[in-house]
Each structure stands twice: as C-alpha cells, then as structure tokens.
Image (cartoon, rainbow, N blue to C red):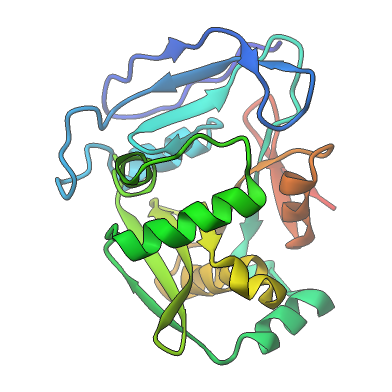
Length: 248
C-alpha cells in the first residue's frame, strides 16, 4: 500500500496500528486500522481537545471519528475505503432525493449539543437489530461512549414526527465542513427514507453555517451500505496522494 500522507495538525497525535481483523464491509477480507485517542481522558461535556482546524486536517488525511478515537484504514492490499465529500455550493438533489425531502415535510428538527437518553438508546438498539446485526454496541454505556463522547465539537440533529423521536444524527464541526458521523432511526419509519432526508438537512446546515463541504465518511464501491453516498452529486473522493478529485 502507498505510505499514508500525514495530517498537519498543532498537537502531537501518537498513532496505533491495530492487529489484522475481519473487514466490517467486505466479507472475506482482512482490515487494519490506524488510530489515535485524543479524547481518552476528556469527560463528557468537556472542551474538545481537537480544534476545528486540526480535525479538518485529519479528515483531509483520510481520518474519521468513532467515539473518542480518530482512525483511518491502513490495509496492506486494499484501497476500497475512500473518503468522500460533497461541495455544498454545487450540490443539486436528484429526483429521488427530492421525493424523500417532500415525504418528510411533517418532520420537525431540533439541533443542539449531543445528549444521550434512554429513549434514544431504545431507538438506536432497534435500528441496530434491523440494519447492523453484526455490530456490538449492546449497552447504554457503549451507546453513550460511541456517539456522545467526542474529541471535537459535535452537534445532534433530532428528527421528530409529532412529539416522538423518529431519527437522530450526529454531526462533527470542522473548520471547512460538517462531517456526518452516524444516523439512526426508528424502524417504524423505514418507508420515509429518513437517511436521505437527514443527509439533505445536513447539507443544508452546511450552507447555513458557511461550511463549503459535507463529509460523508467512506465510499466503498462494492458495499451497498456505503456506495449510496456517491448519489449525492457532485462529489469528490480523496486519492492516495492526498488530493481530492471529482467523482461521478
């Protein structure tokens, strides 16, 4: 594999390489992850140890966030996990995305500081059972640590139908972008296409906040759970040389 390019950040960030483990996205493949834990000793609600500028530099070097850790793939013989972003000013929703938008005009949105609750955990657990049977977040404390502890500034976007929570999105704030971390929804609302609707709302929030890019995580061509991200057009992929290139 080509040697990974290094992020230019203002703090020391020791990197740890994981042992080889089964790939979560491509059956039969082995993955290696490079990670660091800048938020290891920060309590929930503390000032994030990573600045918006540092986090932007990390994402532009291929890193993502999971809980208090930042990570990127470091597989020896595979380059299928490719960071993807959308230039907000150029984005135009497709016909199916516009349908998802119209379908959810009765949904109300509340944005603010992330806050875990038992109600949200019940929805998350139901979503996991329905969509990610192999995932191992199986307690409230793991749920809280996974989504509600962060080394960066984060926002929670809570979508409601009436008074009931229909879905929840966690979004990180970087200097030039918003980064979509995770979205989960009540399976009762599966027909609403809330995942598409939430992505459109996050892109719209980028516009409101003056952020030129929306980062959608990894694009994986052979994985249906990840390749849908390229339908938000135009989009760009991060190449192995550290440059973003238009993708269609």
